[in-house]
Image (tube, rainbow, N blue to C red; front, side, top):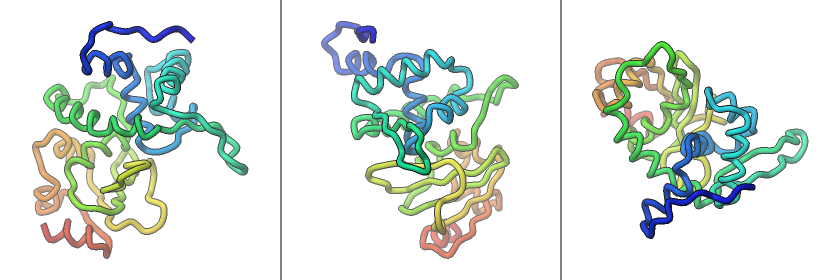
Length: 208
């Protein structure tokens, strides 16, 4: 394994960029915030990354203590990657970076890939409370784990079990929320988000 490149600056920001500043690293963290992922799943949800680069970044993340690799027991019997506690500490970094990057988002370009679960982190910023929220968009479904203190903060696909609330909305509305142009409260009031469920969180969203 090649030695890690360094800015050789005695500065915490420079040291942080030594670890996470390479292309794709933070996006891999974004994917692993959903919990353990197989290499093939990571590659599918990181369109544009080569297999060599993805493998290299994962090795770097293991070396730097951001991620670990383990073998699932049967019947899964697959190797998965997951964040360490140190890696999960990058959640607020990604949240802040995403909030800062809203100004750069603009309109979706014809060449832009999109995955439903890429809206998970913006919605985590936008929805207050604790519980499991299932979200359905045209592109697919994902679920949020609001208030999770460790482990995954979201997951791809429907929620396991009964969620505290289900939200159905279109991608345009979700994008407006992500950009900060529309709050979840406003979207619910305007009928742009359908909220179902009997949990406290669903009732709070409907009563906003």
